Length: 548
Image 1 (cartoon, rainbow, N blue to C red):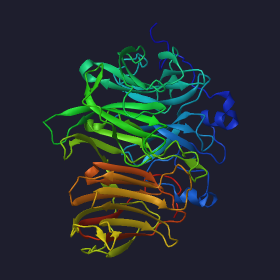
Image 2: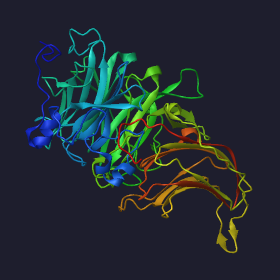
Image 3: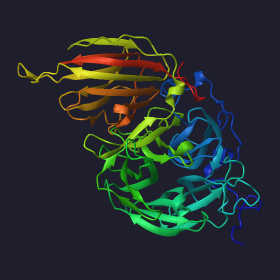
Image 4: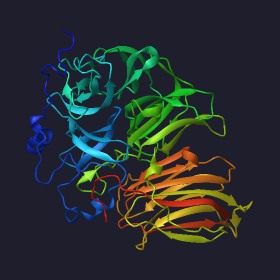
């Protein structure tokens, strides 16, 4: 009998590992202690009982776990009704370990409803990263009496001795998964073989998996017609940034904006850790072609998705409406993620981001990223008037108190002097925005007109002190250009910066010791014309306790 586990035959139960202890067993079985709530909208803690900084740093839009520790997004799939977000989750403590798959669903990628743990740690290992697909044609044979199939998860079971690929299937719309009885479906006898990304490749009419040989610095492509039997297709690498581990690969077909009608490229994503240029973990990408068996890059350029330090383990949604390429990523860095200044929860996801490819000023294709559907959350904009700034002028605007917001602006830089040395002193022409509070804390975002560099400086915030928590970042803007656009989203401790329509993106965590209250616009040694500016308070979408 080909498939001995399905929705009508008793299969291997997905039970908790006994070593987890009382709380782990309670969580996996659906039981909850008085102060722990894994699913549902309410939390077991009252606002007054949560530490101040846990509320100050908690986002209102970005997904965070109610309690415990969260890292990589997993199993991103749209089932025709809900967007599913599975994620690496330790429900026991705000530290990495005891890895389960947490779960939430949404109809818009912003209003998330918590669900019970979907895939447990078992005696076969922890439930490491992987994918979920909608097996609507029942290629797997795991849904013999369901007309529209069901969700199948393909993920890594990890022990100290081995990492191998497992299949689990859900008979209740993705809320609970049962392990396939003939697991593992792919095992190469390695301790560093993980993080499968699986998707349907229509031209070749098969499922494709890209999976990482982490310490060998190599990715492998596999194909399958039933999600259970996999054949090796090709390999990629070593290539790109050299690091200790290659992790969380992804492959997506992405539209070329401004190109020929229907023009696309395949983009291969690869997360590296540790060893990223800025330290710790980051994500790079390669642009090329995929024929159903092998990925061929167009060049050997190393391109990073982000100019800051907290965007990792990017995963795109399967079956996204309209065929859009939309992803979530983990907003943290393995250098300090278990030390960030919260006590009851750790980990956040980025906002959903849509991706296209565009040709830059040099004719090279590059990734363009923008928030997906954020406009629907805008409230009436805060009214303020930004003057024409001459050198040394500034304007201060109050921020919405304890509320996420989006700041968008178009700026033209003018009257830039030909020389930047005065009285034997360097006088850089700059435009900046400084977010501050009355206690002297601040972070700034700005543009230097000499080198056309965008910067982020978070070093003057006092909420988190760690030797690896880099304070300053920069990215290049088009040379000799005097116009730029900024879109800034600040939500609790999460900061997202999109410059020039998303051609430059920075993802960062910010930890002021007290709430930020104002933003000050300032010019130095140049003039600036703000042709458009709007500050939108954003609706809260997460049922989480934040600072009121």
